[in-house]
Length: 123
Ligand SMILES: [Mg+2]
Image 1 (tube, rainbow, N blue to C red):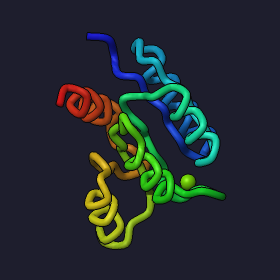
Image 2 (cartoon, helix red, strand yellow):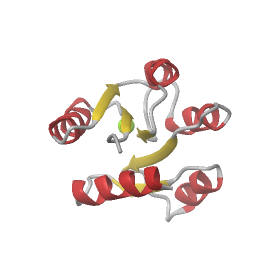
Image 3 (cartoon, rainbow, N blue to C red):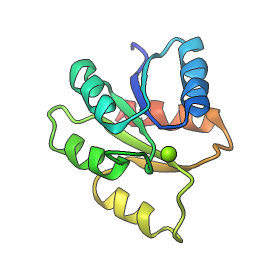
Image 4 (cartoon, helix red, strand yellow):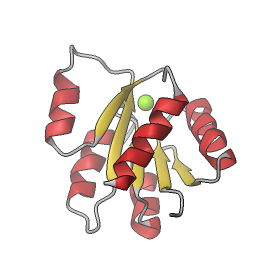
């Protein structure tokens, strides 16, 4: 089975570079965007299996991108990676909106994220 195709959207350059390096070196097809609007453009063109999504970004935030992606066909699985914490309320809302799962930033383990990606794609 080919490796999952990933698009990562996050406004932190260092973070997005780290994701690109990690998954790129392991043979995943990964493209990145620093803004929601650019992310949507790439996602529409690339039709990835997985979207790694920041929540808080200037312009269109992760929430709004998720809403749009849920109306897309096929709809990629969306994994949020965010430092935003309001006691789990936002995470619960994102999951209810159809996000696949949420990870805390900073990430404690890229391996765990990789496992979640592969699990999501095996479904
Ligand atoms: Mg951010």
